[in-house]
Image (cartoon, rainbow over all chains, first blue to last red):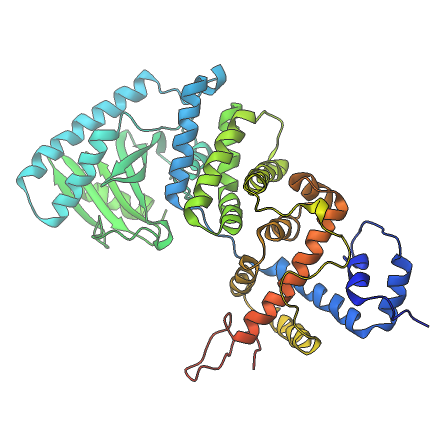
Length: 264
Length: 201
């Protein structure tokens, strides 16, 4: 004969969790006997099992805001500075050649700024804002230590919280990858050597719709602008606003954008 | 790769989990961000090579939960587990009657067919209504698959105390889900105002 004198709550506490290891307590045998004859307690454990299934299937992970990601890595950068570069083991060294490369590109694009002051249509202003921000930040911002595709992918995931896979087509090698500012937004820039010519690919994350610019930085379809020999091809997709910048002729850069970059 | 670079890479992977937990515990975006930021910076000072990706999540999540529970204890908002009777104490909110509980069982069965994000919304709201220490216990064990020993160590509890927290968390969650589903708060409402989500009729 089962024991219905034991209170249900006491029995449930003693036997919970029913199907996993639990801490043994005095009176558990009586609780087992109670469970055998108490339909309410059996129903409780059935509900609990259902709840376990629900908890295992429920997906409510909230994404960390981009702003927090930036604050975290800014704080870690300050820590590095405070404690010494990676406790004396490296950090993010930037080579002289890298800095010089950045400076040269800044100078090159600076010509675009001067040109942009004289033209006032929206597309030009967008491009000039893009160039202007880049010119102000290129040398100072973070760059990846080893520009192989995996390192670049990890670098952008760490800094921007987005997945960016560099182009790895034949004849295309990565010179460097860095973070720059476009109209105040952190953006990814990967500079390639494409058949002997330098091509910079910018991506401004749209952050899954979280970042909705007041005015799209770049037109939706593939469009190009030029400034003193610097060609800029721009387009957008669901994840990024893109720009490809190079001294290549417009037709070549547009073709390059379509064939190698637009699908990335 | 340097320890700092390894740390940053591992933190990148876990930032969503940390923020999610911080938001669940604090209930506020700003406090959640501040909690994550302080925990990550402190952890970066303590991090040493050897905490691999598998253990890193538990390592840093433990620090986040410890930090917040310590804070609650200091300001007197954390129940003292030693002061609670492990058996037979009163429920922290009214437990629905058996009829309502049966209703919940049916609804939970229909929740099994719901999309994970729909389930997430329902469960999240129910969890947010629990006392913070019970939320923490559920998050560690049921969401992040901490063992009882790991969760007890994180919350500075005995195994029995941890088990008691979990039991009460489950019972409370059952009750909250019943209330949510009964009120139609988590289901989709039709134009006539009747709930049509998750099998509530």
